[in-house]
Length: 122
Figure 1 (cartoon, helix red, strand yellow):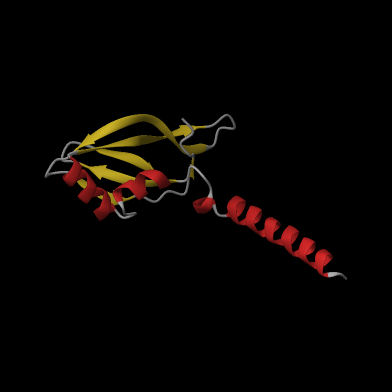
Figure 2 (cartoon, helix red, strand yellow; figure 1 turned 60 degrees about the vertical axis):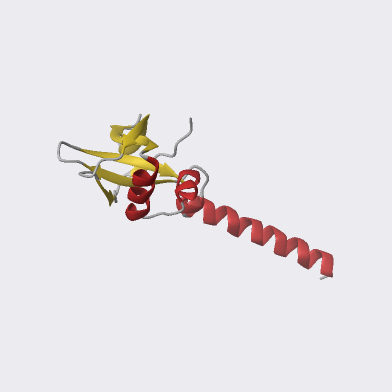
């Protein structure tokens, strides 16, 4: 096998691995959203922050979100809710873009779900 043939086979194999990584690990996919729960004395909402949002606040943890909220006074986030898709399966989906205002009684927690989390496409 010539050097060019080996390089071609290696390039095709590498491309296949990258495609598989994105398809099987949505954390690497564009539009990936990290969910958090915002807890206040009156209610709780689930919010989603995109990779770009997290890069802007320079953190991926609930503490980083709280710190950014406190320092900026407010954050624009996606509110998420549970909905049924066309096949009847439940999934976490973005509902609307909202502003969350800083409040000393507000607390941000990590939020884990077994449901499919839809990316922000708007």
